[in-house]
Length: 498
Image (cartoon, rainbow, N blue to C red; front, side, top):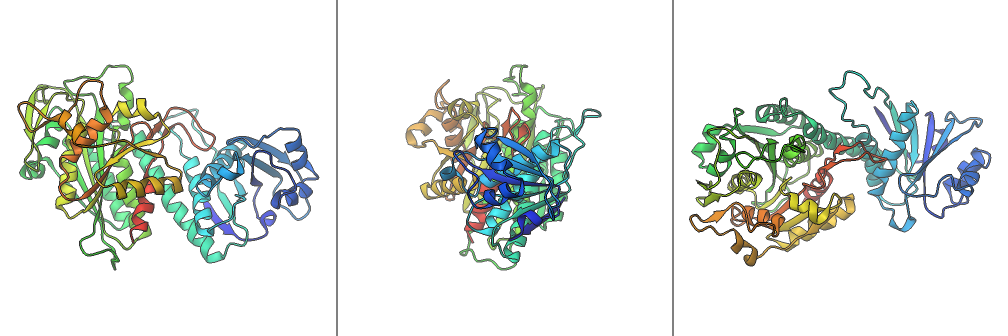
């Protein structure tokens, strides 16, 4: 797809359609709407007056027109809710809604005006990212009824935007949008295709593209490092586990001496629950249990291409959790990389077992600020639904910063508490700790306090994305399925650390 940013002459864009944002209680006397109303012979005012569009988020109304000197013959009004709640991150939802709507009409090109003041780079970035992520579909393996309609050109208009700023914003939007779709493609792959070895291969190919160093540790290396917690999960599978390690080293670092950001992801390519077998109903969804790993890989891709001036390490534990005669049993005791012993009481609480060794490894490799991402608990879905990611950590400043950046990027994070009173609930009678807490109590927190046991001195935050990594319904701006959650927040966090 061709992308372009323009700072003037919105209606002169060489496209088939124009798209513009409208708000609740809007009218056709406001700036660009007034110009478009005149261009369409009063149809904008008529459409709003007739309440064919009320300005609610996701609403659209199409106007056909013909005007001298204007190539476009259609105008799409895109509802974005209340004006005072509209911000830069909302632009991606609006542009994505416009893109999906116009694509259905088999149109190939459109120009978009977000009707928002602010940083031209950020506005253009969000508009382009929204269009790119709107084009993702689940139909990769369909042989018929496959979406064949596509856009070929997108023009974003930011009134008064300088060409250099618009070019930068467009380029950033392409990198972030493509990286989010990279995460979504991984999460959507069936587990017979995306097993740990294949995930590692795709990480290696991506690293070459993004200018990252990539190392893949096999089970023998992990055994040698003492990763008994991680290895315990892979024993029941014929697919060997892989520890994917990506490194980004800037040409010139502005970070404080010894400052390395670590991104760690849970990469369970399929989760049966192991011996603690999950119910059959809904088990097919467990192909997305590697979404934390996909987020890590996608964020590292964007970081490699955007080239911030701080070093970052990405670690993904890619494992399949299966039941067979070699699988871990409830009551087994294993020893993790940091020497702690773990009583495994439920083999379906496997994500924390692989993250234990992964976060310890990241810290050993020099990371002093670690963020892990995992589809860890069903409890977080019960607590927060699909609108907010659960966040916990050992450093309030780090947690606060991620929550704040999430508000800027349009990704919601909701903090849950940690503390010694919760840590007591995972003390084992026969080992140092056990991998579950009391039945039915604070399940999300129990997963976090377990992982915390394997962080030594680093500042650490844990993101439980079980409820936000997958969306079951189609949205106006996005297909159903994997969301690529947290990629935008992680990239902005790294860039703000410069």
